[in-house]
Length: 331
Ligand code: TRP
Image 1 (cartoon, protein in one colour):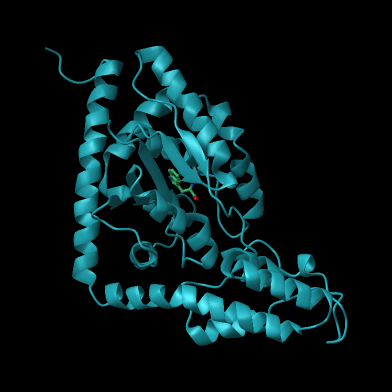
Image 2 (cartoon, protein in one colour):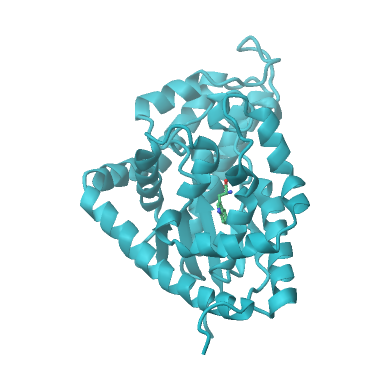
């Protein structure tokens, strides 16, 4: 029996942080043997909001690729590619746009949210409205069965299913219904207790140095009611504890929680344990980052052969989609 297909993408909109690592990349790595995996860098999606200044785009694509490889994605086992190098995504986007009611796009929650949230860019563009439809094309063109994403992407998956269904209703079964694979750690807190996000400036980046990681953890907020070392704390109120829950062993988690509740340990002691564990997770990633950053030709090879492979799969679907729609050969 052939393996089910998994497809997921990540935007090259800046440096990746440990939230991306545990929320997406590590999950992608786990899936690579069980499924036929396609993972891509969504450079066109980055353009939907960052079209005005593309000077960083290339570097960001490179950095995402390096991080994917450093996190353990293996080009021998998964197909890793760039969206813009598989031009068939754009063709399917055009075909799908014919059957997509405007209201479906306008009511996607991320559309209005982002438009009001993002003040420094003009997102009144055709491309930005079409963001979820481009994502639908990304998914449907591989006839993917599963899409590992965070909860925030569920509306995009929903519209993908609706559009696939609508296409199938008009032209015959081409697209299977993709299902979301919710990631195990959908939310990682940042150094200030809010969701880890570039826009909040509370991230621990994969490109940080050990010193920066240490400094960031040392200045993290903890239980705000625990002011003096002798005050008893509530670990549940501490973002440091939330990171322990992800990066520390069961014993360590129990130990720091008990130490916090009884004032047996101070916040610095607790942070030291977290720093040690973060460094040991990040050290092998840093080493691989150094390795790949020193080999730009290898990176280009990986991206171009991955994109070539992805294209073969995309071309196959396009033959079916064109035929179903009455395009293609007139004989
Ligand atoms: N919108 C996704 C994000 O911001 C990135 C993405 C683009 C994607 N196309 C996709 C994810 C297709 C999964 C499948 O995270």
